[in-house]
Amino acid sequence: PGHPRALVLTPTRELASQVCERLADPAAAMGLRVLDVVGGVNINRHIRSLAAPVDLLVATPGRAQDLLDQGKLFFDEVVVTALDEADQMADMGFLPQVRRLMDRTPKTGQRLLFSATLDGDVQKLITRYLTDPVTHSTAPVQASVDTMDHHRLLVGDRDERNDIVLRIGAREGKTIMFMRTKHGVDRQVKKLRREGVQAAGLHGDKGQSTRTNALAGFSDGSVPVLVATDIAARGIDIHDVSLVVHVDPPAEHKAYLHRAGRTARAGLSGTVVTLVMDEQRKEVEAMMRKAGVKAPEVRVTADSDALAKITGARVPSGVPLPVPGQQQTQSRKKPSSRPTPQGEARQRSRTGRPAGQRRGRRSS
Image (tube, rainbow, N blue to C red; front, side):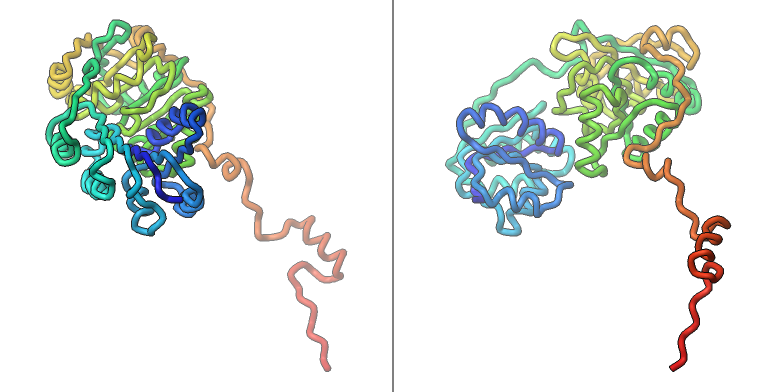
């Protein structure tokens, strides 16, 4: 127990869950046990799971380190190690942990590294941990696939943009909206739900169950709008996303390409729109140029035909929806601490005294 033979390190909980899910069937056919250990889940649950032998462990770096430190996990029998989305782990600041974990694995084992880029810190990992590596390259990330349409929508100021986002959120089909910050995600979800749009948020500060429920609802279509930070832009394979909206344009072109790649997957068509406020035009134009994307620029308003034609935008219902997980607290009134007149009368009839009057102490 606690001595896996294969290790996969991923930057996010969602990706770990997806990898574990994809490995489940072939592992079961070979009689192997797969387990994922990720942050945001009670560590005692992982400790109990590790009490039984595990063949293949899928982990986020932080939780793997926690279990190693507690003496519940050991890497001395690992024969295959895979680093998935290594460049994203570098971007998220995980490399010091990754190096500590890799140092605990036997040097004689096989090591695999998957990354969108092989430069900078990723190249340092390759030099340090891979012996005489062989590079296999797939098609580079690009946003110019035949089934993907790109548009820059000039939206004026922030208030006008907010109205446009609400209209887009009410469209039919699955939509991912990207924001730069976690606070921006939470705020946008509240705005959408106030107007009757079924939306859920996804970012790193949300608990594991909340993130799992958000992705499950989005995948099955019960929650058609997912508002996310860049955590959802890589590695998450969600079927049939027809629209990607850069509510906040990304800071650099690689992020644009990875965000855009959530649509037009597996031969399906998709649309990518970037909402551009007037003061953002120059920086967005430069970013698009670096990304190699040709996106026509269109001035739109919430009521414009162009917006409806490009995105399918329509007027939301306006019927407010509660924040996920708060349905009961919003629909159930807090009971009053003061008794009603009817309640006081009932108490009087039972005790012969007004409500709240205590029985006198008997003298001895």
